[in-house]
Length: 555
Image (cartoon, rainbow, N blue to C red):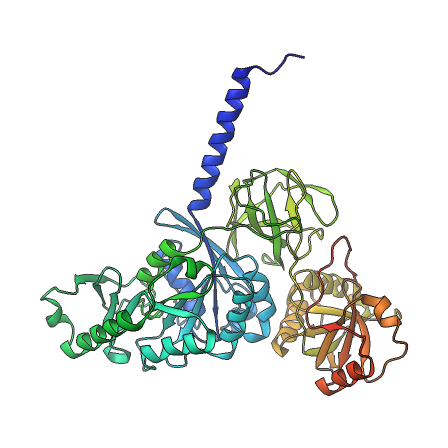
C-alpha cells in the first residue's frame, strides 16, 4: 500500500477548504422564518404577497378567493379551501435578491397551536403579525411565549394600516409593556385608514409612497427623499408633519437599533403596512433579509452543533399524510441543521441506529414538490416516509448526534373515536396510525387491552373535526366521536413505577399515550389539585417527556 504523499495531503486540504467555503457561502445566503399571528390578522395573505414579491408566484390569492382569483398556495388541504382557514403547516422555499428563503407557514387557528409549536422548532426567525385595529391578541401572545422560550428573533409587521386602527405609538407601547420586547420602528406610517399614504424608512429617511395595485398584483412604489419639494404635492402636509413629529419623538426617547438584541429575542424591529394592498411588503422583505438571523447552531444531547459541521444532520419536525391523495403518500419534513445534504446519501436514524438511503428527497412548495439534489442548513426537505420516521427524529452522517426532541403539549378535549363499520377496520387502523404519526391529533389508549378504540386528545374541537373529515375523505372511513367529559391531562413524571407506588387513585382516569407513557385525565383542575394534595410525592407535567429508542403503539 503506497503512503500518502504531501501532494495528496495538500490536495485534500484544498478540497476541504473549498467545501467549507462553499458551505459557509450557502449558509450565509439562507434565511428561515415562520409567521405567527392570531386568526384573521392576515397571515396567509402576507405569505402570498411575500411569494409574489419573491417571484415564486405571478398572482396572489386571498384566502376567500373570488371568482377566478387563484386559491392561496399555502392552503392546499381540501378542508382549508372549504373553510378559508389555514389548518396545517406548509413549507414554501423561494429565491429573492440572491437569498434562498424558507418560509414555514403555520396554522393561524388556535385549535392547531401544537402544529405551530413544532414548526417553530425548525425556525431561525419569527414574524409576528398584528392587526392594527386589534393589537396583540391571545393566540399571538401564546406563540410569542414559545418564541421567547426558544430565543427566536421576532420581527413585527403591523398589518391593515389601510383600515381604521389604533395609534401607532400606542401599538408600540403595548408590545413593550405586555411582551417585554423593545420595539424599534424600521419604518413609520404616513396616515392610516383611508388616509394611509405610505411609510417613511427610518434609516434612509426616504418616503415610500404607494398606489393601490390591481388585486393580487405587485404594488407600484415611488421613493422620494424626505426633503424633496415634490412631496407636498403628493401627501397632505398635516399627515406628513404628524409622521415626522412622531419619528422625532421616537428618535429622542426610544432605544437604538441593536442587532445583537434582535437576535437574542429582546428587541423587535417593527414594520407598518397592508398585506392585502401590498403597502410596505417589499420594504419589509428587504429589511428583514438584511437583519434576520442566519441559520444558527442547534442544541443536541452532546451540546450545540454548528451549521458549519461538515457532516449532514437534521431533524424531523413534521409528518404529513396524503399531501398527494392520488399516491397515498407520507412526507417527513426535515430541517437541515449542519453540513450538506445530497440526494441518495445514506444517513443514520438516531433513535434506532438504522441506516437509511434517502433516494427521493423533495423540495417543497405548498403541495407542489420537485426532486432536490442538495440542501443546506436552514433548508427544509421532504422525505418519503414509509412509517420509519417520528416527529423529533434526528438524521445524521458521521459521528452520532441527536437533537432535542419536540415535546407534546397538554390537550383539553378527549373523545373516543368509534368505528361503526367493522369491515372498514383495516382502513380505520391505517388512517389512525398515519394521522397519529403526523401529529394531526394526539392518540391515547385505554390501559385495558380489550378496549381497542383509540382516544383522540386535542387542543381544540376543530382538530377532531379535521381528523374525522380526513378519515372519511382520505381513507374512506366514517367514524363517530363520543366525548369523555375530561378537560385536563397530565403526564406522570417517573412513569409507571411512580404511579404504581400510589396504589389506587380516585377522580381521574389512567391512560397511556402512543409512547407507553402514563397520562392522567381529570374532569377539572379541582380534581387534579385534590389528587396532588392527597399524594404530595406525585409529580406531573403539562408537557410530555421526550423519549428515545422506543417504537410507538400502533392501533
